[in-house]
Image (cartoon, rainbow, N blue to C red; front, side, top):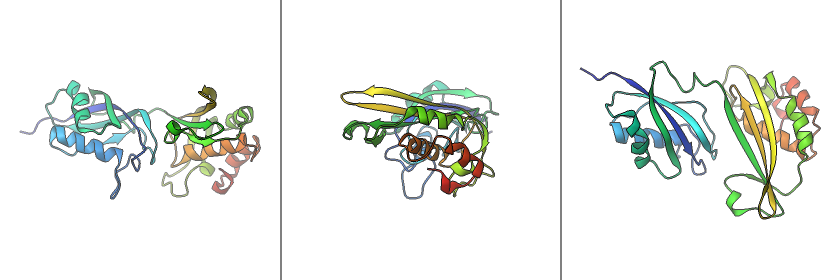
Length: 238
């Protein structure tokens, strides 16, 4: 008789610098590929994974949610340390717990937060090279906030998604767009763009961030963002 299936929920963190993204790739390392191999190392079975949000190449995650089913008898509390022993140092499991078989990390995700960080300073910072987008120009945060206000609410984000996006539509609800400036010693500063939405289209976050930065640099007007939304034309966004 086969063992009953159990459903496990993981909270994971990773530095995405050396990965081609979350999704499995034929000829490049991926976060999912490493995690599948780690689970197989513990249970002897390559499990199918569900993830709250698939990240692109080079993107990091602080609290990514993953779920998978297993017939393993291993206690849930042993999965975090066990998987970490198989994983490289740039991927770590914070928690693992058993949940209802009906839980699915992707389908049950209510919202996601993405943060894009800019490092602004007179010269590039060595420790920021994989963590932030370097700019030496000043950014007008007030103009960026005015532009960001047009993004909040339910909209068709057609203009802000990749032309390769295969989602059936681009209607999403943006709960908030926050911009913050903090000093970064010795002479620079961080500017964080935090997006909070129910879901995102392919490359939507990076396109939105790029468009807001163009506003901050004075390359486009703050009021123009609402016009881009209405036009639904990818060529008009950043």
